[in-house]
Length: 165
Image (cartoon, rainbow, N blue to C red; front, top):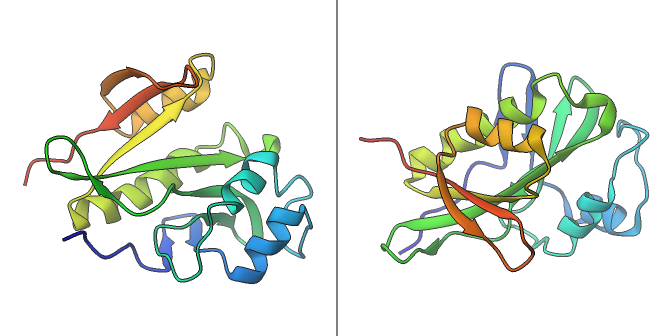
């Protein structure tokens, strides 16, 4: 049996990570902006993530909001599935508008979601372009220590082991 998902709203010291609403997902798919969204949001990666959005799915994409401004998105590519070793595992993706990079927001958002996946007993993996040094640093900082090689797109697949109980 797979675990339930994270709460609809995850928070950290500086950020709120609410799951997208169906209306927001539709606006993101269409590339439409809303009040409170950074002028460069949604990005193409956000529009791509909106194609896998499912209403009522706690494992769906979320906004990364600082104060009253949405700066990016983070979320899972569907609910966890049992990995080869039987542990439930899920893939995470994230991205920020250029102006918000370098402030630790991606690391903070990822750590907040990882606290929830740890609580649920779900291991997390991420795929990253080998040339994306900033994202590789975020993943390493957040404990993604296992390298599983590359996927069919040539991205590195990194995994964060579950913490010991």
